[in-house]
Each structure stands twice: as C-alpha cells, then as structure tokens.
Amino acid sequence: MVAFALAIPTASFAQDSTAVSNGTYPNTFSSGSANVSPFTNQSKRFNDWSISAGVGVPLLQSSDLTSIKNGNGKNLFGYSAYVSIDKAITHAFGINLQYDRGETRQGWFNTKDAAPDATAVGARTQYDAISLLGDVNFSNLLRRVDNHSTYRWALHGYAGVGTIAYRAYQKDSKGQRVMTEIKPFQLGSMFMQAGAGLKFKVNRRIDIEGRLMYVVTGDDEFDGGGDAYSAINKRSEQVSDNFFNATLGLSLKLGKHESHVMWHDPLQEIYYKLDVLANKNQDIEVCKKGDADNDGVCDDWDRQLDTPAGARVDGAGVALDTDLDGVIDLYDKCVTVPGPVENNGCPTTTTGPVVETETKLEGIEFDLNSDRILPSNTPILNNAVNYINSSNGAYNVIGATDTRGTDAYNQKLSQRRANNVKNYLIKNGVQSGKLNAVGKGEKDLKYPECEPATKCPEWKNRANRRVYFEAK
Image (cartoon, rainbow, N blue to C red; front, side, top):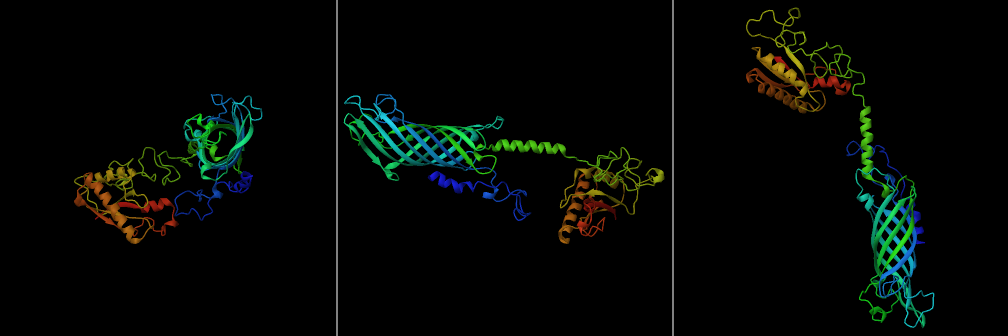
C-alpha cells in the first residue's frame, strides 16, 4: 500500500525531454549551446523512477536453529515477498525504499507437523521489514568502452539498513508458543542486508531480476530459540541470527521516455555522437562554387576569378604584383623594381639603384582584433625585403584597421600591426633606418564606404585591416 501510494506522485516527475532554449537561457553571455537548459524535471531525457516486486525463499543460515541441514536443523523452506520504490540518481547508482514480508522455518521439523520426539524442536518466524537500500549498477559502472553488444543484462549490488519487526514461534512435544515479539522502529529492531541481483531487460517498461540477499538481524532471538541464555541459544556462539533470501521479481519503469537512466550507457552515446559528427563532416562542401581559375582560393571569396595559370596569389586570390608597376609577378622580368608594361615591368634605365618618389605595397591583411602576421603574408613581406633593399629610398610602414572598436583602441592596434611588420622586415635584412612604423587606426580605410563595418561584406572589412608601405 505504501509503495503504490508513493508511486502516484513519482510518475508525474519523470517527464519531459530535453528542452530547447527559448532565448532567455542560455543567452549570448552564458556558456553553452542553444540546447542547454537548467536541470529541472522538464529537462529530463530518461525515466528514473520504477516500482519493483518479487517473491522468494528465506533460509536461516547463521543461528541456533537453522533452515539448512548442518547440525542445527534440517532443510526447511519459508516464503518471502518484497515491494520497493526505486529512484535512479545516475546511470550507475540509485536508492530503493523496500518493504519485505515473509516467514522463515527452522529447526528439526516443520511446525505444521507434530514433533517427532520429545527432544525435537521446530520454529518459525514471521517478519516485516522496511529498509533503505543503495543500488550500484556494476554493469554500467564497469562497462568497457569498446563493448558494442546489446545492453540487456545488468549486475546490481545492494546494501542498506532498516527496521524489522518479527514474531518468533517455537514448537516441541508440548505444543507451539510465541517465544519473542519485536515491534518495528525501535533500537533493537535495526537490521542490515546486502546482496546482488541480475537484471534482464524485457522491454522499455519491464525488467526481470533474480536477487540473493544476506540479512543480518543483529538479534539472537530471531530464530525462535527464546531468550539469549536459553538452552537452545547456547548451542552456538553467534549472537546474530542471519539468513539468505533468494527472490525473483519484476520492475516496472515509470515515465514517458524511451529509456531508463539505469539502462543508459553514456560512453556509447558519446561514441555514437562522434560517429554522427564524423559523417556530417564528410558532407560539408568547402568550396560550393568551386575554384574556376585553379589558384587555390575558392570562388566564394576569390576577388580575381581569372587569375592566369601559374601566378602566385594573396589570400584573396589576387595575383601578386610586388613592385606595383601594373605587371604581375608572373610576367614581370624585374619583380622587385617597378617598370613600364611595355618593358615587361623593368625600368628603362638600370644604372644604379632605383630612386622612387612614391609607391605603395599592399596585400598584407590581418585577422579581426589581431596583430599577428599570417603565413599568407610572408611571401609578400619577403618580396618587400628585396624591393626595399634594392631602393635607396625610405618607407613608412603604415598600419590600419576596420571600423569596429573605439578610435583609441584602433589607433593602438594599427600601431602594433605596423611595428610587427617593421620588426619582421628588419629581422630579415632591411636596414632599420629605412623604415618608420606609423599607425593610422580607422582614419585610412581602403574602402571608406565601410562605415560602419556592417555596411560591407567581410572581405572589404578584411582589406581595411592591413599594413602597406609608402615611400617618404
């Protein structure tokens, strides 16, 4: 009655599945994805309540009168039954509130029969017990990560304490009488039990379980031998009458979800999700529009879709023109020295060093909020080393940003970008006296229409995040 009375409210608590965020939690300032929600009854994914019941046979094993033929009795079988309310805390641990009722039979004859002789003693004990048991799912706790077998068998371990009430009867040639009666919820009525059970999952609702429990009563009068100093209770030295209880039962899992948490293997779920993620990665198209000019830059962000075959390009797919003379490096006979197109990019006179009045070298771009020189910039910078060394002029290394952030922050960021490029050039052989680092912040945009940055596509904002050279 207690079990079924408590089962009614428990069914309502094992309910809803994972909730999707409604925009209030989590938000952009919280950690977690959009599918994370507070752990409440509404966010549960598994059933975690169940009701169990079973019947069995108790056998007094350690007592003055036993149910096993070992010198203090013969083989006598009693009966038992249990019902419990089970709550799973995790996939490997739970708590059970259990009620046991039964009768043990012990001694040299069954008390239903007459005493065979004047010395024979028989006994029986009717008991009721309530206990709180811890439930450890060893199969889930110790399951191997490479075990891909169907998960239908599980080994459980149980241990707990409770209160036991009993009435012990003794029968001999003089008749049957009550020897000891103990009421529940008293100090002397405390007992312990522990054991193991093997569960089989029939379906999502029902489990079958065989259990073997060992009950320690802590009472020398449980077997019906009378007071502790009676003749019967002096036959053995133990002061606790203990018994085995073998049962076979059913578990009914409550809730509307497909699976109970005790049958859930979190490791297998992780591997399954990794497999799904791997399959999704295989379906991703990196270049949806392809690479028409085969320059290694996808057409989705290629700014020059007709790059000649063999030409070196920057990160935006534009053919490199190191000396900015209008002849790309592929066709330029003098890559680091500007010259007219009709002379294949070489100056008409080549006597002495080239003197320049003004030139710009661009294409050195940066990630958002970063002053790190990207690997894609190093070919341009290495060509700039040769170009500057071949010239007798001096250059400003000018850093710039896009329009995100404050003016003061962008000014400092642009100066760091210019300093990093200057230091790279000096480290690779340019005389420090030829270079001066200048930060212009967001005051020198390559695309002025990108104010604010949301007005432009990202490639234009990236082009604004740059460093270029300008002759003094």
